[in-house]
Length: 285
Image (cartoon, rainbow, N blue to C red; front, side, top):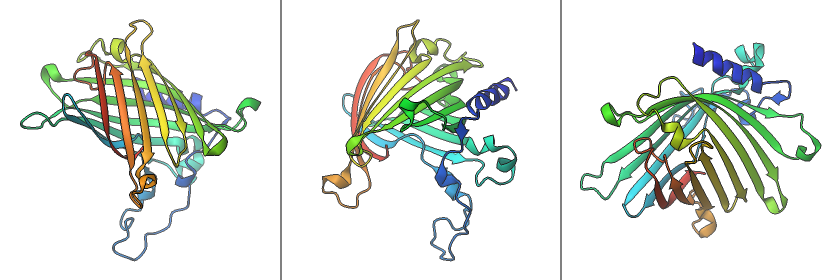
């Protein structure tokens, strides 16, 4: 009950009069699926509420030879401005999300998955409309939510945590079809951390992310996470480029590279420092 109350407080704070409904693509009126039995939406009336969330990729890295795989989606819970969303407009910004990140040891004889992170999430997202002059051409969103993260293991290998967070994001459109995105996130661990009592020392309590590039071309991004008290944390640098621009016509994938340095890339070894470079493909960046 405390967790639910805290989330509602965060959502209410984020949903002031300066917030407008987001995700325009989710507000379109429902249309029944076509009569064609091969129609993807046939029998799935709410498929239009499902969309991507975090990047989806398959990356390979050397020394040791492994793969990092991530899947992620979000689901718009209340859409269309009808029913509950009409009575309580704040509900139109409510989403459920799920992200799974797995590490696959391809160098071992049995090629096991060494660790996986399972992260269900409930969050509110709104769009700020009343902005000062220097932000009049920018898009400003604010997101507040609660998430659980665990690795599904038992005994001494079990890792789990719960946290609430707030994340404002500002996107600046630039010349030549370029865009600059800035995002700040702060989180507070809640509930028991008995499986990993000092994880906050290694994963920190805040992060800053920046990305720059052409949405139809190359994109560069970096995220720094850490804690001021412990001085520990991590940094990741990502670069992606559409394969269709490299003479791979109609291949709707991205060439994706990632450099990670620091603590906490996986939950199992969150207190071990490592540097990893991987390259592969992304379905969503």
